[in-house]
Figure (cartoon, rainbow, N blue to C red):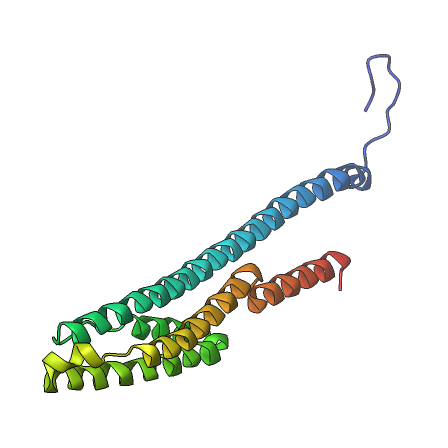
Length: 195
């Protein structure tokens, strides 16, 4: 091959062409690999955020049901003892127990404390309902809610302990999410190091 002046030019060898193409190919691979890694990391972070939001929503539903149970107890006392009527509404504590059993096994002790705290209140309500049914005229003269108030204090304490534990769980990340993220980052780092 000759140039316009008649000087013979060296023919490009295949090796020379490959040597020039290597930086282009490596650059392209790095760009594609970086794009894929960015998508994987973004996807993992989005999943982690969704899991945290779902966990928060479940904890909020549990606490909301706890406070609804508090109101339910007050309503039960009023209807069954003072009006001497049946109270057949389902207890919101059933929802608390369901959410705890499905999603938060770490709250089992606290929820059981709330369940134990409501038992003396149920006993008082049942006893007062019987007393009201037996002698309605004399019931209001002899009515003493001191045992109910004492039991109510213990119930409120158990509820507050449960709410505090929920707040702690809300603030701290779920261990499984953190462990998965650490595992992912370690595996990504080892792949990048060529191990």
